[in-house]
Length: 89
Image 1 (cartoon, rainbow, N blue to C red):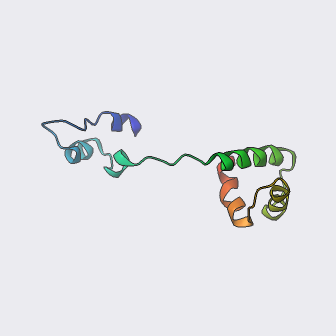
Image 2 (cartoon, helix red, strand yellow; image 1 turned 90 degrees about the horizontal axis):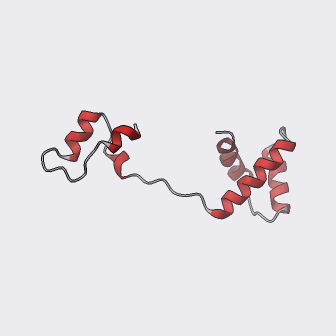
């Protein structure tokens, strides 16, 4: 998909961006979307969680919340459940 996006010329005088996207089967919204960078505090927390889960793989969200709060991160179980899947991808 990104290879096809790179083929699109944003300032082409002959083909509009719409037509180029149509021909290459690329969504126009994908041309302009920029993903947000993860906040440094979240990256540090995810790194700690990753190391902790290597030693305690069966630990659940509730005990992870307690452990992270002891480490100085004010988190809740909902946030942990959102972050954990990204650690395994």
